[in-house]
Image 1 (tube, rainbow, N blue to C red):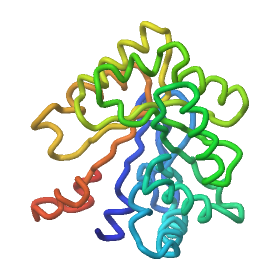
Image 2: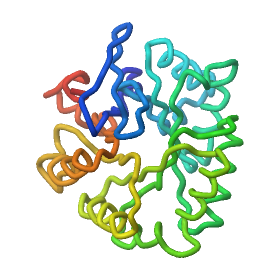
Image 3: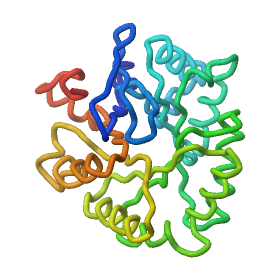
Length: 249
């Protein structure tokens, strides 16, 4: 995987408006209704766990920040926590304040979610996470688990009250119908997600399209859109039909 494709893993887009600014060549957009300005290109956390030498991953993070990237993706389970540990080291010495830090959790109960939040905070070496997301909303029962009694949402609200997290979102990459069900169940509980992460790429339109089915709902509700898999882990680039820039656009 090229450095360019690593840095282009995630595109963070403002859903409620097209409000954007440009600084030193980087585009910054408003993330949904949060009011936060984030870089239009984010750094994918999974991939910083790939290099055998952690120093290479740290260099990638620093290089991204130097080029104006502020949105940092990660997850509790990436490489058994190694991605978060590397990100935490890279954001020392004042760099944490320069980024919008996101991670995800896999817990499906209140206790598991609370534990994973605390472990992520420790690995990332920070006292708060800007955005935390319910990872892999890929089964039709996952929305029910999120809102269940003694479920993840209870832990999230307690963590938010304690200042450990700021915003809440969900992710998924299997079927747009599960995302749509999550939005329906959220409405039933009068809950508004701050963000939603999903695949958005040149192949998406051809099969179970998140862009066709989910994106309009997110824009309508003012939920911040986080596009991932823009290059399909490099598979789309290997077709030799599109460039990295075209994939991001």
